[in-house]
Image 1 (cartoon, protein in one colour):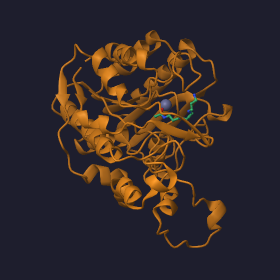
Image 2: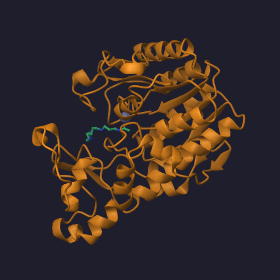
Image 3: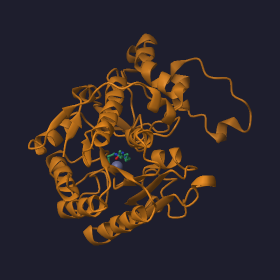
Length: 348
Ligand code: SP5
Ligand code: ZN
């Protein structure tokens, strides 16, 4: 399976994040790229090629893109690094409904007043390398689409930062740009009238779900730890979320209890696979998070490498052209092996 990557994805390397007010070490680090590359050393490597902004602008609000592109520079220019000892862009003020109360807000001027318009948590900090890395990850995803469009059955996109928590106009959950959503749009433009996205990251991909919520042509199915048990993204990922309007029925969530291991998790992937196979989709995007693994620090699911291999076999068994997009997975010693196990199962 061709592995598409870009060295520029290493430019984003957060040292910490802020979680429930505490500064904790970052987990979505640049070293993830190298450990995955090392585990896939036997596979052909392809460098990402630069793509224009057309598909990115179809997925995201152009104002979000402009904000992300300029945020780190505005933070520096605003003197925040000296002021607060924090050289990353971090929100503190959030224009939720609780503030707005139906009134039309006039956009904030100060950088620190603007951030919360786009960023919905405190964990997803923006540094000088964030935009170049996130934009490179989109090029990685689109190059993988090109590889599949040129006739390969499967391509693996080594994207980071990950993307499935990024909505049309918001970033959070360590995600800035939704690589999987852009890949799905790329497959649509390559002529696939129906595309399926299957998300096996430990967390629900609320961003991807939101982007395609009302769309019948790109369906989204996910297995993840139950947000009703207290897990990120808290508000979304429940089984009753099935899409709306023309997209009603094109969204399938399979939340699992904490402590769930291979058996029920692989069964859920099997349900997702058969849901896709009955849908008429002619191409597949897999949001491959390996943070459902037993030793991952960010989730309570207990999936093994064999579980990931089985998931690969089930989704690869659909026989569809597939772009496999990297999402989460944070245990550096096992991360690469989990990705390799999935890809071996999926097959070329
Ligand atoms: C793409 C992806 O997997 N995003 C994960 C976002 C969820 N992270 C929320 C939990 C943050 C808690 N981190 C503090 C360390 C405690 N182990
Ligand atoms: Zn995750």
